Image (cartoon, rainbow, N blue to C red):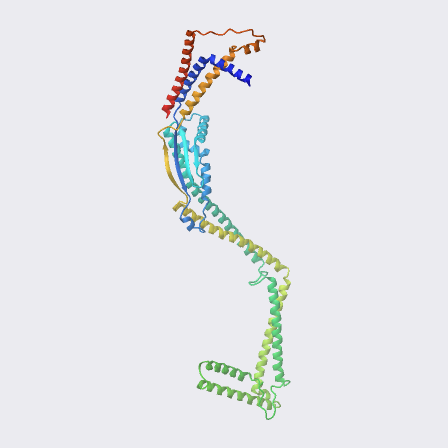
Length: 510
């Protein structure tokens, strides 16, 4: 530690020896630096603030009918791409900076300089943006900020319209494409149906349901045929006498199972009419009384004809009785019903056999038809969705043209301060002052090292390696002391003068 202190004292003595060179260098550097700083050109800053409003009254009202873009994301992208090369080149053309460009290198330098100096600030969620630009020419700085502001506003509005037009163009192209697909699908369906006209599934079910229905119809028709045949055989047995028409005992009334087609039909109609009359009148009404009387007369007539037929069973003229004629008519009708049922059975049998013979072809045709219909329905559904989206896009475009979903409000128009914002001369003056002092001290130290002197016996002994026998002290006279004080005062005055000049400069900067 003692050696370090000793060495430091030696350095300080060397610097003090060449203090006048240090002061001269400090003055020279300070004066030169201050002049350079003073002559630096003034830097003016132009700025503007703009607010982007993404809230609109119609946006929630038209929800579901229109397609609203993500305005917040769009604003974020606009802010990030504002200071891009295309926009900066457009600014250069707008403020006529391209008129003084000599070569491509100069143009690139201008573009790069603008991109570095233009500053865009944002507050994030508030959508409040600030644009700053510094230049020596205040008018040019203001024009550049105004140009950027114009590009920012026009970019938001223009991109929205371009996006709407591009979306409509794309949807129209897709609609046209799906129209062609639908026409092609309809033509394929038509050709397929014409080619397989006898194998197409009927409305209401596929092949297997049709086969089951045909089998059910065939079985039902066969049952009806058997019933008709039994009815016919019963009538035939009544005519031939194998089955009595009635069972009569002496002293007993006629069995209620008497069959007389004509009289039974008349009695049935009268009973229906009687039921209708009873809904509106009482039993004492003349129409009801007359109808009941007529029904009783028909019942008596039916019994008399049945008795007559029984008496004439062994009568040779029985074939000419009215009852037999009615049975013959009933037999003819039963025969016709049986023939009709047989024809239906034959038809259903042929239909069932035809469906069974198509057990391999029809399912294949149904599968191909289902595939064609499925493709057609998918294209049709997409086509209808595209039509809805096109209408939504049109409404969205019209909504954007009528009212601005994203509006721009200029909070502060481009302005330039009267006083320059740069350069910071006070800071530069201080740096020059500190640098001049350090440079003077450094110069004195370098000279002391170039031209070293021995300031103590210890340093002399260390360097020469010889013992020191003694030293001769300096005896200062009064005259030498006065000169020394004057030189000290002059040195201090020079430093104070330099400090005073620095203080004066700093006062003018305030």
